[in-house]
Image 1 (tube, helix red, strand yellow):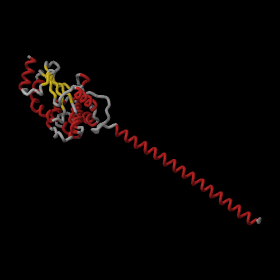
Image 2 (cartoon, rainbow, N blue to C red):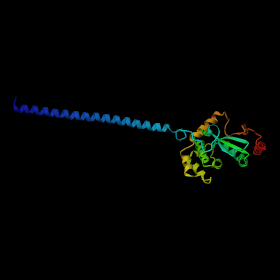
Image 3 (cartoon, rainbow, N blue to C red):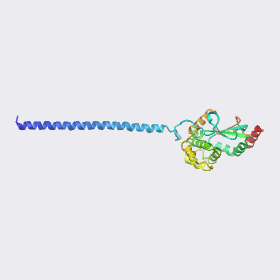
Image 4 (cartoon, one colour):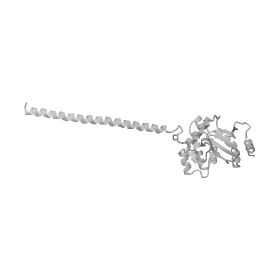
Length: 258
C-alpha cells in the first residue's frame, strides 16, 4: 500500500472519530435537555398543586379556611356564642337568633327595637344575641357571615348595639349580597362614633371571628329552630305569638321584674 493510500485511510478514520465524538456530545445534550424538561415539568406540576391546595384552603364565601374559634369580647353562654346586652341583674332574658341579611329579622328590629333598648337601659331586660348565616345558605354568598364577623368586631370595641342597629338600618335586599363587601361594612361603621379604628378594620378584613360565626350558625342548625328571627323570652318562644306586641313584651318584662 502506498504512503498516499495509508494517509488517506488515516485521515478518514480521524474524520470518523471526530464525527462520532460530535454525535456523542449531541446525544449528551439531547438527554440533558430531556431531563431538564422533565424536571421543569415536575416543578410546574408542583406549583399548580400548590395553587390548588391554597385555593382549597378558602371557604366558599371567599374567606380564609377555618381556624380556632375566637369569641368576641364578653361573649357568654355555652361555647361563648352569645353576645350579651344589658345588665346581668336583669330578671328577664330575651334570646334572639338573627341573621343580618334576613328581612324578617329587620322587621322584628324595626318593631321592637325601641322597647328593647328602653328595657335594657332600665336594667329590666338582658338580651343575648346569637348570630346565624341562614341566608348565605339559602340565597348563596357570604354577607351573613361577613356582617356577623363585623358585628363581633364591634363587640370587641364595645359598640355592638349601635353597629347592630346600623346594619339593620342599611340592610340590602335579601338577594343582594352587599354585606359580603368588607369595605361596605367598614363604611357603615363610620356611622358609629369611634368604631372605625385600625383594630376594627383589621378584625373585619382578617375575619377574626369568622370561625366563631360558623360555630354559632352550627349551634343554630342543631337547635331545631324554624328560622330567623327566633326570639325567646325566658326560654319561651314569643315571635310566633300573634298576640305579641312591643307593649305586651314590655308588660311581661316589667311584671317579671316587679
